[in-house]
Length: 416
Image (cartoon, rainbow, N blue to C red; front, side):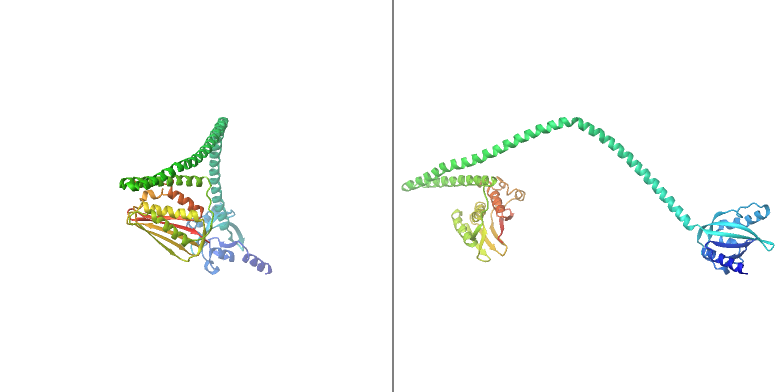
């Protein structure tokens, strides 16, 4: 009795499933592990044909297996382990290994089936196959890539060998080119010195005869008063204007040359912006044409700022002079200065001929003049000099212009 209890305990706690059937395939016992595998309770399967635990395909062949074994002793299942597919109560299927043993007990024959769930093993096998396939694909890809790399390396090797063969010639060419560049650079430096020297000498040499022409024109004008000949006065004025234009052009050339040579530096000092701007507006009155007027106004506190007074004055004079030249005889030139906590802003606006849109991007280039200036005199250097002076004072220049509507220039400088 004690052995029977022990045997039952072992069967009930076995990890694998255990089912016994009679010679007709009727289930006589089933342990808890088998119930768990097939999702049946013990009461639901006892007395039922074992085929309820099989797939449709295996059900067809099961009874024939038992009949053939009893008749011929040929073991398709009995005593032979094999893999089968089981079907649970809810219809799902799983793989398992079945080992069937024949047991003769109390004058009759029963069959004991030992069931081992293969789900994990099959999943692992499937994963292994997938991994093996993936690995084979990777190996093929890497092999192909390696072959391509080797081929590329061979080609590179050939190219390198060819390059090495020509390297000596290339080095010689580079040395020759370097020598030519050094020679060109020396020539460029020499030309730059010659240009600076020429501009300096030309400016000096031209000033003396121009001064004599100016003085002679003034003397002619004085001595011609007694003749009261208007034609003499008219031509004297033309001579004076021509001398002033040539002098202005020479001054522009000299200023640009000094900037390019690094001889112009911003020398900042404190001065009253309002007073300086008012003086400039007053001085420029003599350059006005016809009924032109300069309207000056200051906004903000009347305080001193720290900038280069001479450079700033030159910038303002350039802009007002342009406004006078490129505007009509009835033009009102609006000249504003403004100071706040951080900036000094200068605005000069006219209602003149304006600047064509296509020309605006070149406006600050040296020697550039807009296409609509016609016969109005000018060297094309003023705004280039203005831009350089503004940059030296760490300021910025901006403008807006419309054809036949006028132009607004804005200079802004930090004063903090």
